[in-house]
Length: 488
Image 1 (spheres, rainbow, N blue to C red):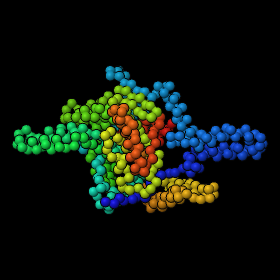
Image 2 (image 1 turned 90 degrees about the horizontal axis):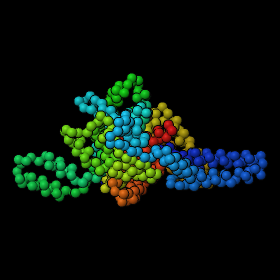
Image 3 (image 1 turned 180 degrees about the vertical axis):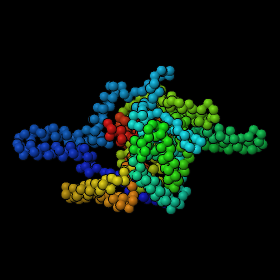
Image 4 (image 1 turned 90 degrees about the vertical axis):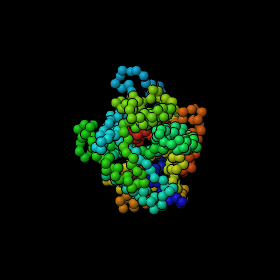
């Protein structure tokens, strides 16, 4: 089957010189302007400014670990200071009498769990951030395979997905949406348990023997793949101002009914909303992968299930953030952030290699931040102007325009045209986290994930100094690093 292409990935690009970011470019230009002004007044004084300006240029131009030397130094300094203050370690007690004894570590400390009625004789869970006031509900979906579908159906799914995201431009109370694909190895006990539970003891012996042989011939190791859509709401922006968290939760339930209906034509089937028990099991399994089987059995059990009155079942006992990894309970994780999208046309299977199940627990989250429809036109016009300015600047300085600059300008103009026809503008980022239970598997998991990203033409960068934040972003708890960075 041929792979369908869907144009370039749209994202705002920097107009920086020499591939630099906006801050580094402004720093260089300010240094040059200062040097020219001093030289205009007195050339002798300008000579004294050359050595410090060389240092500034080196800090801005020398690349280190996907960023400039200046950014690398600032990250290390902040990391060293957090280590001195003891903010990189988390220790919980088994028996502690304290109102905040069982909080999640790091940026997840303000998050607690609410159990809300869905109006259908059921309940679903909401992750409530008490500091920010945000509420995050999670939809469990089952995606259709593009390998077995017709090309016209795949095109329709992509178009409907775009329309579904564009609709959030008119819903300012939804700041972001996270789509997470989680894969984990299954030792085979799930299939044996399901077959054993369904077999009737009074059934004929030949039938039971055939089922036993089928189970024994099945692969000993399989994979479990779960897809989640987590939608974060800001109750302060609701059309009707809720008076309390329960009224806000009721409004979330009403909006979820509308959002679920829109997902029907996007190539996914909505299985249901994540219950409080499922959210607790997901978070606990992420921090303690050795307990994944136990949590699955507790979810399947009709009684003696998971207690959701507090986070005591979900919180880890210990966690420590290192500069290049995250150690927690029975697992060791490493997280990456999206540094660059594919520079080529995007096919319907562009992320297939990155999302392929492996022998390790892996979560990949696509974070979508809808741009308000009222300001999308101005943002795209600014992007178009910036791309045109960069192209003209390259022509004047280097007397030629690179193919990449020409392509960026073409993408910017195409995005502006599509917006005038009703398309929406969405900021997009990607986070990937891999967890291993044995330290010996760590290097192998890292190299395998990075090579899979390269196969998908995606450039990942290790979340240096922020492993815990990137790890938390892949959980259905409403964490958005760009938003947190703006607040800080």
